[in-house]
Image (cartoon, rainbow, N blue to C red; front, top):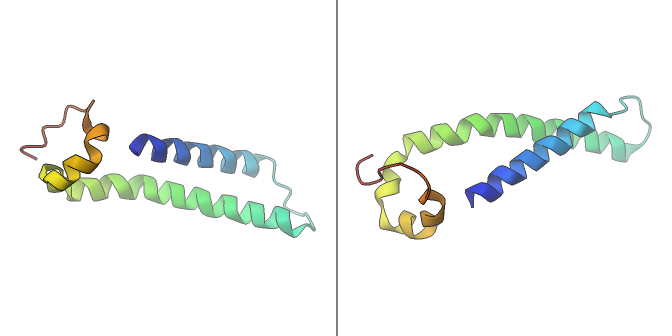
Length: 87
């Protein structure tokens, strides 16, 4: 699940950055204006959420001990060296 979110965020940022490099600011077409606006919004959201999610996980580190969390997210924790028994 985490890999899917990271890949999606990477692809969305790549597309938004490419759009910002090729944008035509003086276009009369509304679709190009909407595309530019969505690229700007997605870049802002990605930059804010990149810092928010690690801070959220750091604040709620004790949830890793719960069995319900381990059942849902065992695959994302398999290759980590985090000792979830004593956070």
